Image (tube, rainbow, N blue to C red; front, side):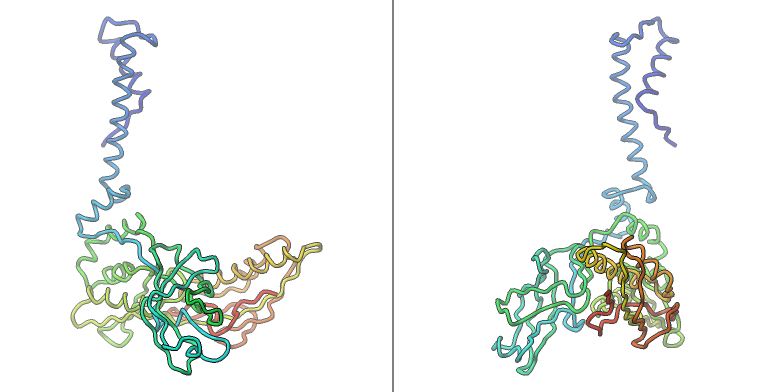
Length: 377
């Protein structure tokens, strides 16, 4: 055990020892004896600081950064690096379309070329089409695979965000009909620490910890819930819960490949998406007197975002609580006098105003088939 001593403590004790064990009595500031003690004490205090840091960096619970990487190397467990957000064509996310006629009328070779760029309206986030994508002569739309220009979680985008393209044709439009996720930053110390602590158990493989950690190592996966005996004895499902939006086909495929490396012979594990309970809500706001039109518009936008955030953050198998929703709405601004919920749909069916419970492997999400699942009037 190291008991750290600061500069003041070292100086004080050194002066006491000097007084009791020598004939030197002049300890005034500026004196030779005191000056030498102060110089030595400063170096010793710095040594104590370095020793204290190095000591803490030798334990998983307190280690950080480069030093935590060294501990991970002992278990052959490297830190997960940053990844690029992407969406495959089968995910039906990034859509090129026309409002009149067909795509063939504008693009004669019937192909959206690899390298075509799609961006946000301000051009701050850039994605590229990752493969040549063909379409039929009669097609009025086509879905293309895209990948972010660089790595990082800031490239994860919401619905209808990537709305500009580099084709140079104003009568061809594009948008992402689903969220684009999978972009991650370099693995955090907390997450890396958790994997290191469980490295010994997960190294045994074929156990629940090994399977969960294997699934969590896939970029964009926030959690993985195991359902035993999903298809009879000797089988289980891994329900993939993304950090944002809905689990994509690529994410589920990556989880499947990952768990295949740790599951036992004779045991079948299948990565699956959680079942989605679509939600559609319409809210009419009433404002206090003298609330300007521009302020009302901003509040409506904020309420829409707050409702969406509440819905997607309800955990797997959780309960949609009406009073929580009402509180979320009213907390947005003191300018909201009251509100009325005029549309309350779950599973595409009208529902009496109240709490809504779902099964353990289901999650709520705004209805992707609706042009505007959350409406604030």
